[in-house]
Length: 318
Image (cartoon, rainbow, N blue to C red):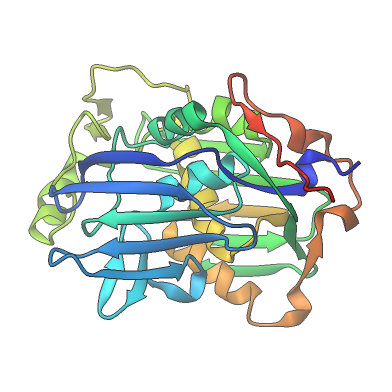
């Protein structure tokens, strides 16, 4: 009998989210719907006149901007921004297929992490599908650099992310996290990490049209080596964990989950996007493989978080 962890999955039901865009400060809403096997993640956008643009595949080639968030082009001069947190929640939980319908220009920021997305997914559970999961297996290392910052995808017998950040700020400093992915570890160790920013940058960003909706309810604010939020850090090293959360969302634009290692130092959305472009620039860098053909035990992929119902598909007979 095929293991559940080698099969694709989608949401167990439809979900609705509403809030504001962290950059626009405008009201936005997002619907996430279950999707058929082998469809991946797709975005549609409902425009003000009621027209629907999409669905468009969530893939790296559709990324148009990586300034402070990841933005995807849907065609017809229409885009969706701030996609990385919701994609991180879906990918981090091991979901393969979902259709996201956005009303507004950017996904709701919610509390600045993936936690509220994850909690909502928990209410509908995961639905296993009949098709076998596929992976992008890294065959040859690729690296992109910007001064001393870099991002790399490398061959590795597993699914690992190794991120390091270094900020001239006593609250953050130098932090590193090595993360061997399982759905449970994502929920426990990554999903609640919030986005963060510096008050010294706030005026410039707002003059440029960014962070208009940023607040202490959806971001960690730092000023003069102190944190302005009343809520304490959710993790001692919450800052690097949020960068890891972002990376998981950005790497979902590979179109399939990765089998290999991602490493980053002082990285961000731009380097995450560029390393995907470098990987797919040559067929010699990767291959698409079936979950059944990977040389590992899939016990780690069965590591479902507590409280998440997994609905098995019913095989038809006769």
